[in-house]
Amino acid sequence: MAEPVKVDVINRLNRNLGLLHAGGQVTIDIVTPAGKKGKFRTTFIGCLPKQYVLVQFPDPNRLGAFAQYISPGTNITVRGLIEGHEGAVVAFVSKVRQTLQIPSRIMVLEFPKTVSLQSLRSTIRIDTDIQSKIKVKQDYWQAAIKDLSVKGCQLYIANGDSLLINKGEEVHIVIEQFHSKSHVKLGAEICNVKPQVDGLSIGVQFSKNDKDKILELLSLALVAEL
Image (cartoon, rainbow, N blue to C red; front, side, top):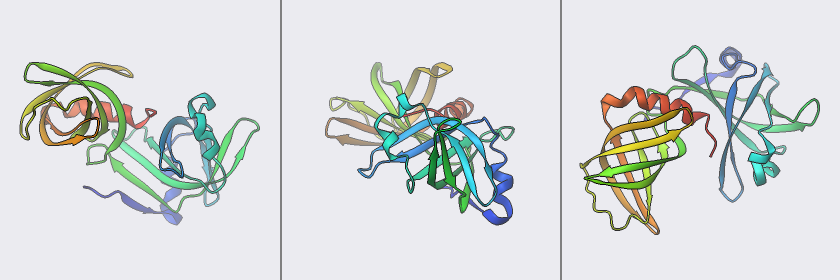
């Protein structure tokens, strides 16, 4: 797997964070002490070099119980697509310094020590929950895409214990609706099959002919909420 490029903050981070435009959409990842993950869309406000980064609080109705964990000392991962750089992603991890209520709910994050820059065309893998169907032979099975990269994805099929499928078998994945995309069809080959307690986990490798479709899905998945 390709490793993200670490950028020296003192000399270059301000320029790279500047690629995230004020008012642009980003996602934040929060992990609770119990290990539960949340991913929420919000707005990047801006930064003051070497001091702090400002990010809008996500919609409280969507945050739910995760709101209590956005407090001083909590690590927050921020990700955003860079405008004008097709398929480029900037990401950094920072601690919450404080939260503001006026003029609106804002997170004040510590200025990060490193930032990762990576292309969606590499093997970057994004957590998702995309509802789909997988066609095996002549039958369709309801499935959820649990993570996604340009090369492949992990599918979960609830109650799929009766499904007989083998490594190397060719299948088709159909996504009827995901944000602005509809009726997306992807060819794939089975890489691994792992029985789960209440279902089946399947790893697939995508057909190279569908790369453009997958890049569009990755761009949407990056800013989608879980």
